[in-house]
Image (cartoon, rainbow, N blue to C red; front, side, top):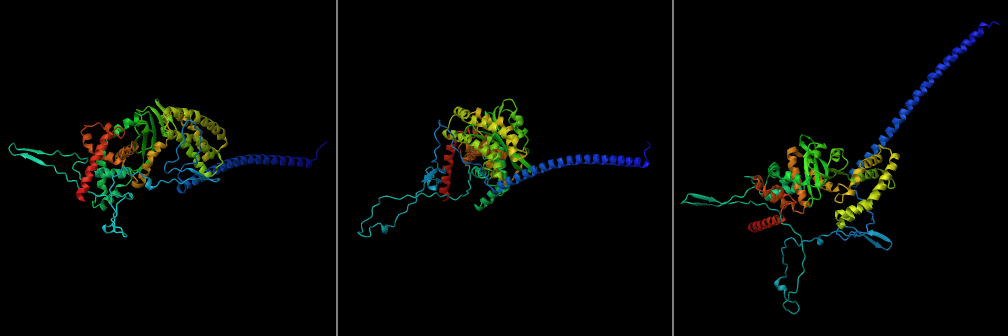
Length: 546
């Protein structure tokens, strides 16, 4: 049977339409696939942007808290169970204790007062206050009054600073028969043929490196004392005596690297030539004498600085997590130790920006409180190193083990790019170093000791703003090392610097071993005798110009 032509035409039209529809459907499906892919990319970018936005907000809140918030890292201490040690005495002036009044507990006011200050070591000058002679008779019976006692009131006063010229007169004698001349032996000076005496230079050094007074301010202070000396002249004095005392630097380094325990840190300083940021590296040996600290100036923060300086060192090295210490931590002969405060500080920053007192950061800080309280109790009790190690193993080790397991459990649940995620990652990466202090009784739980040595530098930086160049920075580093080490060894820095200036001549001639002039090895009796000589001289000067 033949099919009519019109029917064939309709079938062809339908087939053609179907083909067009299938083609359009295929294109639509491919378009959907492309759009779905783009949508996923946009969602991923949106998540990244949201995470970045959250991180930037955290940084902003942290920056605001640094500028406007409290700088203290203290938290409310908890009382751990340490039955083998006596409790800390709360009666020290300045400490706060608690007082229970009814059902209410408040802090007791125990502020130090001026009248509680011990003044018995200072010279005492009596000032007599008596009544007039005409009042020493009784107004009723005209009987002479009898002295029966006195009331004493002590006031702390100060003598105004006064400059004087020490005119050294060297007498000469001659024998006219033998044509012989003999002259009194001249005293050596820290600055040969210079006008500055040792006591004045010591005053300038003390003001600059202990009290952080820049030289231009000291120049103004001297002008007020009728001695107009430019700050450039003061700078030359400091540099000249610094060059004379630089022979003490190698002796300081030898004493530090021979220690078995070091804390190392670094702080930025401004270098004027070249115009860039330099660094002062701090090497602190807590167990050498009363403590010995040495600073090293450099134009870079490269870890090669510390690695090169500590080539002879073998022992326990405690640092923060800065990557520049990686080579030292892996070197043979060095036992690396971390700083728990640096880990705690990162969680403290999270708590600062989030204000979540019930969150993970707050819990981490709470977990560390018993550890720090334990360290405080051991320090107050003055326990030996072996006892400290035993207590740490028994008390601190279980806390750290449970904290580590807790951090590993919650780490996958926290966004890694968030402030909290970074804190957790840092702590877990540093964990093997953070717990190292448990194995060594002489080690500290953190590097706060070395940071305490850097703090005066931070105060000084705000005053003098920069160091001239890398060579002069080495002299600044030497004076900071001598002053802070003297304080650690309970030596008056002014007296110590003054005595060192009298020894510069002998150091130049190599008549004295520099090691014997270091703060932890210097003869304290010699220093006391020198102090008495200076006191006698001061009294005679005051009496002569009064």
